[in-house]
Length: 354
Ligand code: SF4
Image (tube, rainbow, N blue to C red; front, top):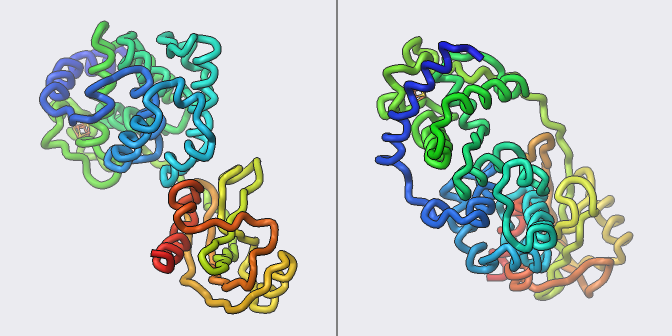
């Protein structure tokens, strides 16, 4: 560890805590930071902005107010509560962990960092956040936001995706962590990253408590830090999506138990963009008798490593057939979570049925 960096960060702790005290946003999980609420909020906030998470969090806490409720919930209900947040493994891991907490810890979340790390879906950052915010333990919580802020403060051009960079930043932060104030310190760093030292676009250095000591700001190279490694190109998959409709019923099916969007409900789809003839053959394979067929607008959905380019067809069907579940629009809304990858097509259905 570099002693000069430690000195710089040590001097920055008090101004940061002072700034946080004056500027912290009022958030539901901050007002009542119970272990369960902190845990659920941190998992929801992975990959999703605070403003988007708020209604999900409120709805979740009303439906599942305790770890026991989560452990006992039906999977369909969980997926419905999560619908639109994406990365569905997160919600499945939440339930697996809740079951472990019921069985091994009598329903009480462990406070210890090392024990938290053993729960499904809880990595170093989340374990640090829960143990410090909910239990007041002296642990750091370092995610991409914190790495960006600290890299700029130190004027570091190191690749923050490299595990060694993260390890060293964790050590640095441990060295300057104000004992007994880990909760405020970690949240202050996250808040600075979320509201001032922004990831996209210019950081708001004029509002920053570190403006006088930040090396990147002094050198004017805030926008060059952190260094971005070139992203791998996403693989493009073309698909044909079927909106099969029989009076007030819509065909849905379950995706395979493994792979992308594993085990979730979807509109029937096949690989590739089909010609009219291939489309008719596919419907015949499914034993579906088509009455009419209409193309929808094309749609695109971007996952981390894959892009789906989709062509939809509204297919009017003579009678219920095939290995599908035929459900009403109300049931789609209330019971069956369709991933947001299909949202262009659920919008078509919504228009038709409401
Ligand atoms: S001064 Fe600017 S670049 Fe430095 S930490 Fe603050 S917001 Fe980020």
